Amino acid sequence: MSMDLELGRKIVENLKEKFDEVAVSIITRDNVMVKLWNTEPSVVQSWKITDVTLRLAKDRRLFLLEYSTRDPEALLKDVEELPRMAKKIEEAEIYAPLPEPGAVKPVEGGVDHNALSARDELGKLVYKMLDAALKHNVDRVAGTLTVAYETRTVLNSKGFEASESKTAVEAYLRAFKGEFSGHWAYGGTRIDESKLIETGDRAGYLATISSNKVDLTPGKYTVILSPLVVGNLINYLTFMASAMAVIMGYSMFMKYKPGDKVAAETLTLLDKPRDPTLPGFASFDDEGVETFDKPIIENGRLASLMHNNSTASKMGAKSTGNAGWLFPHPWNLELSPGELSEKDLFKDVEKGVFFSNNWYTRYQNYAEGVFSTVSRDATLYVENGEVIGQVGRVRLSTSFPTLLANTVGCTRERYDVMWWEVRTPSRIPFLVAKDIMVTRPEI
Image (tube, rainbow, N blue to C red; front, top):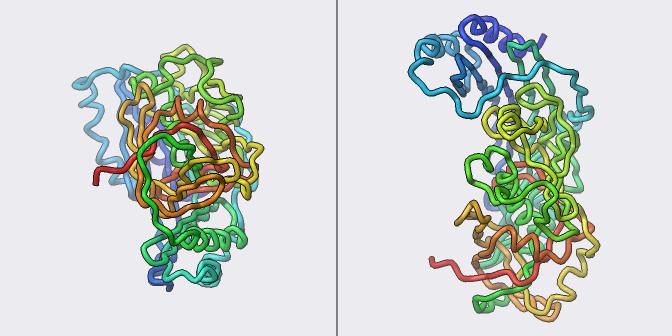
């Protein structure tokens, strides 16, 4: 029996007489990270963390508690007073009992033993990333390479018990050339040397793609978005596809029902929890429901919101295997490929802006899906199919309904992305959309 399973059983056994329902999620993650600064490995870190989360129900009152500890006595001491406090708090407005345990088919192939053995010699891989960037004659390089081994265990007082393990590889590199920079990232469950080299190569290429500076007049342009940018935006979009976001009024999908057109017909967005090559995969959700792959948007139409048992009960639906005890969420995301070729990405662009990276994505209006995001690293003005120069920091200001409806194509080539700005692992193409507002940040 694993230590996490033993810990979870002890917690459930000690609390099940005090509460109507007890559920425990334990995630243990063993990390090795190499940090790069000024073109050299600067720090090698190794650390192990265990996060324990409890869902406790008493008379329709819910308690959610999070701990970073392996000491069950500390957990049990903290919850001693909760049953007496239950009568002093409101009943949960959105509540359903945990489902009865069902059969769960495990996702196979999520542990890459090459990744585990590579943790002892990450320096060799880091230097290959560096060499790929330095071939572009950049001034300096920074970034990280992290390899983790993670075990997730879920138990509850209804009798559900399951545990699964995975490896996770996360790499990003930023290359600098004068005042310009380029960035790329990779995320997966496998150590893929070619992907790591590609991360360095693309960062170096983007840092040196143009040394010419041009001024950009605010207005509507064709925008060409890299997989890093599309991945970030899709992560924000799927927040709104959570049924809890709809219930709370934080979603543009409040005014749509399944089958309604919400995007260009060429776009299909999938939640792929059963893809073991992306590190968000899961055989079961936090309520013990078996996961399954599903479309969120299919051929431009809303296919499904993501539900846990409580939101499904509230909205007269069924769980989609996406719990989150409070907030249903995607596991892995995949945007369908298109017909465009990456090498011809700029070919038919008359006046456009290429965004290689972004940050500061913010909603201005959740109900309408209005947002803005700011470019980072290489941002290029394209005219008549040619790169004219770097435009510096600009802001893309639009709404998801506009961006999705105005999408004219995606590339056949897709990339596996996970880094700071893309926390849900995503398989994403380049995307082209017309008539999107681009302005200058007021800073």
